[in-house]
Every structure is written in structure tokens, then in C-alpha cells.
Image (cartoon, rainbow, N blue to C red; front, side, top):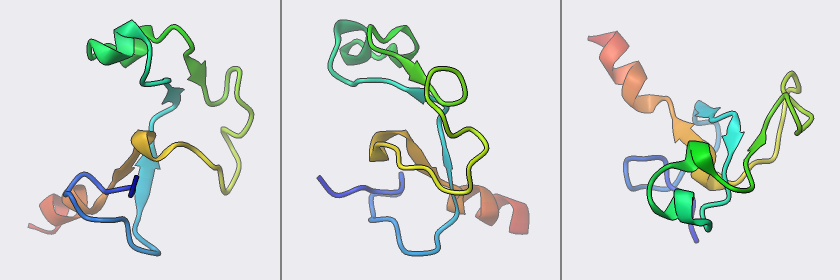
Length: 76
């Protein structure tokens, strides 16, 4: 599956992004029902997953969001 940036296009190298701190599984019933904060296998960066203050962190693409839409709003 190709990681997209929320604008239905692939992320590009150097694109500024942010990451959710909750790492939800996407497979349990709460996730399937649209409640990832109730995930049965929830992990959280900085709590039970090391890396909250690292420069780089590997995370699933489903928790990555582009900052490009916000940049466009701030430019106007």
C-alpha cells in the first residue's frame, strides 16, 4: 500500500509531516468502528513506545499526516 499525504497523493521526499502519538492497530473492532483511541492494542509514543524526542522515528504510514494544507492556510 502506497503511503499518501491526505491529499490522495504520495508523500514526497522532504515534505513536512506530523505524526499521531497513538499507534492504533487498525484491525480490532474499535478501530474498524472508527474509534482508534479505544484500540485493543493501543501503543503510545513516549509512553510504552520509546522515541518521543528522537530526531527520526519509524511509524506506520496510517498515523502520518502532511503539514502542506496548513502551510497553504498560513500563507494566505
